Length: 420
Image: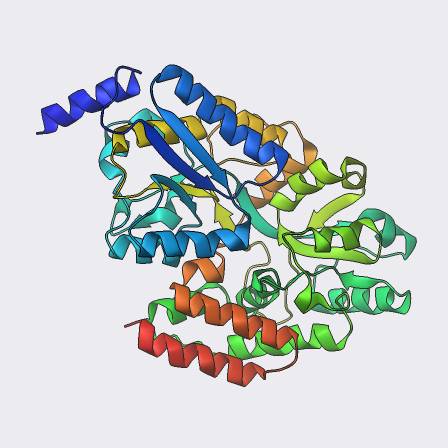
């Protein structure tokens, strides 16, 4: 059996005739910018040219609509052959329902491909020592982007501590400028404030212990409650643009507020730099970033980051009729040409020895390299139902419609039911 498998893979990886029976591969992803779509389409074109007779149907979908679309398709047993995910809890749910192909045999027999990927990139798609996805798009961590011109105008410096940040908020408010642009209709953008505060207050073990139900961990730990209180302190200080919980990130609302000068900062993933470069390259010259501030007396390391190394991840569904061809397609999505195209698009794909010349990207590389821990986004780390509750309670905290104690209690109650 192993000899047959090796023969198939040898043919696969040398571009020989691929298994017959499926001439079409469906590929779903969320890269909706012009450059993002082009990078994937170019990789698909290279694959199709090398493999005549196989057609790839590519479907890009906006972030939040994609989540529902994929969930429905997987639930109906009708997932596309190749699909993108964020790894973590939601992908694990699909794995447990036997919907996702184990890629470990392919990667073991194609060591050169596996070894060119940064080791940390595999963590979000590895379960029980088996790998279920290929990291491809970006090293994405949450940073505070800021308008250098506005900071200079009002004599401000990037804040290093929470008290420094609150002083920046007060100065900007006094001058009728919102400290933070936030488009939180989808709930996940605002949840970054909460997650970072938990980390800065309690360190990475607080969330890990609560999520894994180990070492007495609980979502009612004082760090979670304190984080909720500090989020609400920001709200009460007038740190955010008006109507933030109803603004749509996918439509670019948060960036438009930055471009217009109505807001000075945005807490967002580093992918935002590429998006700004595409939308408003002149404004990018005004942008810099700094790490989320430390909290006085907190246990967390101020160099720790929230995000992922490898985001997004591409998997193959169990229903795919030609998984060998699908795996070969995955290798094209993160080949050298695709990797350098992403660098040109202000992104950092998770590839070793990546050639980077852009000063901002070099800083992100250094920023991530010195991070003692990388906490995956809560809504991706947690099982889907608990991840949704986290987003709901985070949005409610920002809306001042729930107390930090109640938010923590709701999370812990559901966690006891789901995380056994």
